[in-house]
Image (cartoon, rainbow, N blue to C red; front, side, top):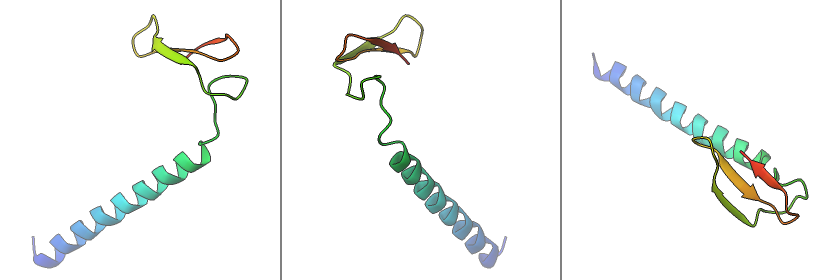
Length: 67
């Protein structure tokens, strides 16, 4: 592998990292107003649910939401 090929690979990796960072930022920006609770307010508490990897949230209106 020549120095020119190595440089192309490194530039390609750097471009891919920058594109993925921008895409992640855009996804976070567009989902910033998504709420778990139906009343649009943040949950009061959370604790692990019954199933592995699930979390149970207690909303301010008394609703229990599992995600």
